[in-house]
Amino acid sequence: MPAASGGSAAGGAPGSGGAAGQGGATVMGSGGAPGDPADAGVPQPIDEAFADMARQFAADYLSWGRVDDELRWAPSLCRMPLPGIARPSKSNDATTHGQKLYSVFAKNHAAYPDGPQDGQIVVKQSWTAELVAPLSPGTFPPSWAQFDVDGGDHFYGYAERDGSIYRAAEFAGLYIMFRLAPDTPNTDEGWVYATVTPDGQITAAGKVASCMGCHEVATHERLFGVPLSPILPN
Ligand code: HEC
Image (cartoon, rainbow, N blue to C red; front, side, top):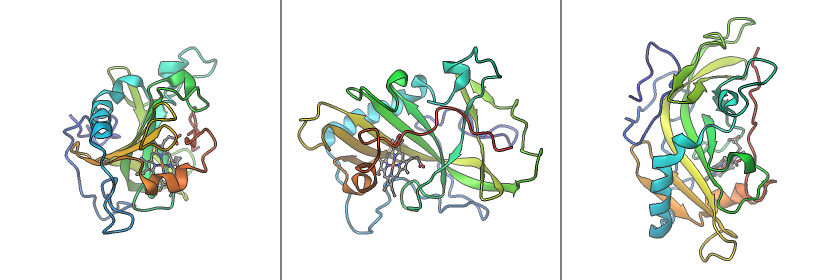
């Protein structure tokens, strides 16, 4: 199931049983699982109650839809609606999002990213980025009309970065954020952070300092707000 068919983008549901590839020679990042200690030796907190919630969200998130899947959310646009697309992370932190491609899902699509945040759950699906070819005009592979369609999920697993085309190759796990009541103990003013490996192991859940270090300066409470519409590479 998680294997990409016919060399196309890895657009299917990674599910919880997806085998984690270790990446090949052409992979941009190390392919490490999320939650690999940024600062080796410092254990990430795992709050069991939050870990149970994260496990449930990891099982459910595919049904919520990608935040930028226009075929799902805006099927009657006056231009051709596009699927969710793989995006290169803006983060340079190789131990978390850096060097990976991602796609974001939100439980409350209408409230992403501005809020209201109460009850919001956001899941960032991440992928290793495999170099396909240098970018040249008109040759973005395959054409935008070709993308995987799987039970209402629409994902185009190619992205441009630094003049090259990359493919979402191996599922590299989930980054989850959810927002409880702001006075909930052991949360970041209600926000809980969690990481899940490709084979479904929770590697952090709770008030995770390494996540907060970046997300505290985000502009939608703790969310950065990723683009809702595709940016066409060419
Ligand atoms: C080095 C800074 C940095 C760290 C550390 C970091 N993030 Fe992020 N995060 C970002 C940026 C920047 C984005 C916007 C998308 C992108 O470019 O990757 C983002 C996006 C996200 C999103 C998508 C929702 C949104 O709108 O923000 C989730 C969910 C997320 N991060 C979870 C986590 C978790 C969980 C951790 C801790 C394991 C973490 N992040 C650590 C910088 C960081």
